[in-house]
Length: 380
Image (cartoon, rainbow, N blue to C red; front, side, top):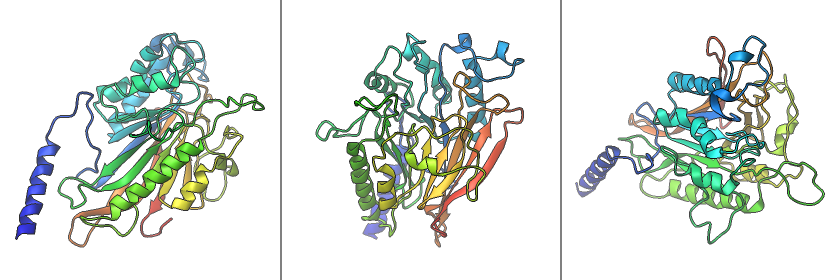
């Protein structure tokens, strides 16, 4: 009886938390919805500039006179309305530095506006072009974390004691839905990583940067801590919650795949522009066995997903009209959805499966390439 009363008290506390207002920046805890689902919209390579004054790249001659950054905004708004995501991940090259914007903050305000106007939680990581105007990577992230409805972080808590390379390394925990025994458990873990911009060491001419050992170590420690939390009282779980990684520049392992090829969904239309050094991030992900997918941008006209050693490597495809694309090949975004399983008591349990698809900015707003990334039953 005492245990039942304790559980009811916890439930009442949870209910009070559920209706409490968000904080000053519009932040609230992420969790699965009442249907046991959590949907992530990945938007990569917007390369946002000056709004309506910015011309588009690689569009038809008929489209060119009327095409601008506003086409990117319209595409994102259209997709938010169709997909109704629980979280938006802007995965780098959000603004087009390249010395053409003297006001990166203004460009970011316009770039992230669809998420803010929709009052949807969102996060951002940086690409290799974001800082190429009037803000450093540090000041960019410090500006982003103060924007409404963002859950972005400059770096993880405690990083002043244990320094970590880059700006924008952090973890998001997606907890169970209201009314679930797993309300306080993270059932899906998201890891955002700052992959840097360009190598600043002698001997590397115009080479893209790599994830550093300090970041790999941070991921490992965070992953182990989350596993421990997942398996402890109350409602201890036997397995580890699945994880997803988002970073802009793809890890070198993306190079291994060609299209069309067996088990590869989507297309490759350019080479993988990955770092010249393999710093071991992918190896660590395989060792931990938790992460089911790595999602990158950077190479705008690649949008494939392929599986290597149990980890899915997926491109988003370019969403922005100012960044390069391919004439006649629609801009696109990637959606990932996690679905919980029903327990024998009829309540929501752990993640059952993770699926993905792409939305195109074409006449029909096409949904293509739906595929199963991972299933608890098949341990894919």
